[in-house]
Amino acid sequence: MRHFLLATVAVMSLSATAHADEFNVAVAANFTAPAKEIATVFEQKTGHKAVLSFGATGQFYAQIKQDAPFVVFLAADDETPKKAVEEGLAVPDSRFTYAVGRLVLWTKASDAQLGEDTLRKGAFEKLSIANPATAPYGGAAVQAMKKMGVFEAIQPKIVQGNSIAQAFQFAETGAAELAFVALSQVIAKPDGTRWPVPESLHDPIFQDAVLLRKGAGNEAATAFLAFLKGPEAAAVISKYGYGTRAPN
Image (cartoon, rainbow, N blue to C red; front, side):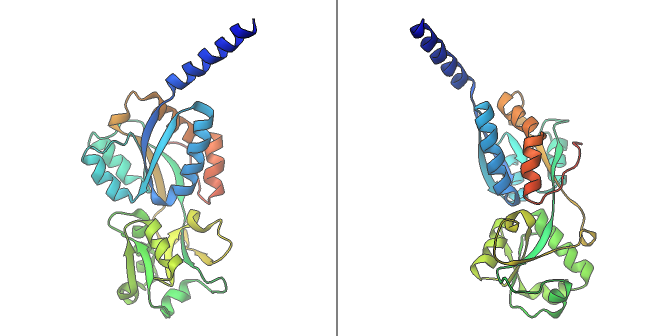
């Protein structure tokens, strides 16, 4: 009887392994930490492994158009996934908002006083932002500075990162004194100073997910997107400072 039970367990384990799958996910750089945490819990619960790549939304979209092997796309905006559906690169009706981003101005100095006056006075050498042409958080930063009326004065001091991750790296390493970054990147940091940019200064940063055409029929990818809509993922998303809204 004992041998029979062991054999049954072995068969069940092999069966679970056989049904486990790996799939490639393109993830906006601002969502790096929560995506890793969500993917870990998802793998523990399902056996499916989400292979995550991080970068700028615009760069990912260019790669997707060139037949990159991604099956799921977690963008930093809502327009790019919408365009993916319209251009036949994504599965219709699979798009939904998984997070609402928050933009902050950050410096690694823990005793700094940050706010709109910081930008108006301009008493700094360099300010880093993500490339506004490819990274929605960079676009939001430019929009906010223009609405404050400081963009033209600050523009010569701006250094651009390829993604929000690189924009943060510039400020963290001292290549820039200030950076416009995602709240999720600094919410858990014990040092530094941050100023939440008023949401009235830029359009809402709705971050949408979509199942790409390569993922049509991929059960593991579909399960991942369903998990992303669930309460466990929502708890992680909120922990990193994102808002949420009901699926589209």
